[in-house]
Image (cartoon, rainbow, N blue to C red; front, side, top):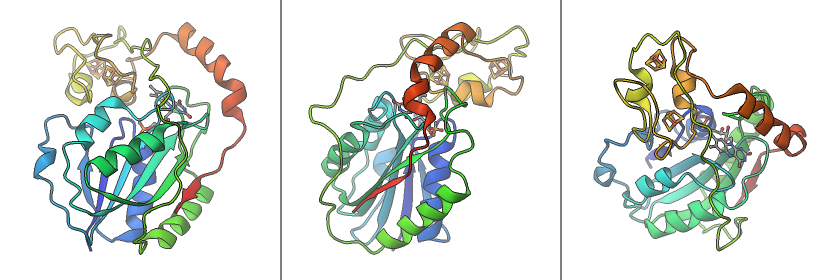
Length: 248
Ligand SMILES: Cc1cc2nc3c(=O)[nH]c(=O)nc-3n(C[C@H](O)[C@H](O)[C@H](O)COP(=O)(O)O)c2cc1C
Ligand code: SF4
Ligand code: SF4
């Protein structure tokens, strides 16, 4: 049995969760990076004995459109799959439902689903440091429970039609200390950043925060006033610790 981690993780939180689960199921899980727009995803091969861990963050309670679009290029070939939605302690709403519909459309057999919490990539003051030691223990326990599952999962939460995809508006900019190293433009999952000016196209940017996280000069940032205002509106929903959930 091959274990494959199919992961969209612009700032690494989703990957950390996926690695905990995948590492428990296999010593050497194969990795497919959905952030890499240049990959030929259709060339990736699976069989019904395999287990795929499909992991994505929740953006506004939905799966990121670009991750869904890239996942659709993979032929599941009847492989079992565990869906993993990672969210920043607010809510994941219809993310798992959308992932379930897409995985089935691709030919995967969905045998489990997990909603897990990781540090909020826009507001790191929420779910700070998660997944932590207690999350790791719980996710490993989930992984051991589901790794031999062969039956389709009976219930995954979420509404159909899905809620409207919101978002947009929070577009990071290079600061005065920018040394024009080009890393942000190279690593942007949707090629939104101009390779000369390092300004992002607001129509393409999905506000994933990868460029902010990767900037070696720590000079790529969001507008502070906008971030503080948005963080306040989420305070009530994000402040109380939410636990990871398993559906199988
Ligand atoms: C554009 C955007 C929208 C987000 N929307 C939500 C949300 O609706 N609910 C929530 O709990 N977390 C939300 N988050 C937080 C992420 O789901 C969370 O931080 C996740 O771990 C990010 O994944 P990554 O570290 O793999 O990039 C959002 C983050 C971004 C960048
Ligand atoms: S990663 Fe930072 S320093 Fe490098 S080009 Fe982008 S904004 Fe400038
Ligand atoms: S420009 Fe936007 S989409 Fe590209 S890495 Fe930065 S935040 Fe993400």
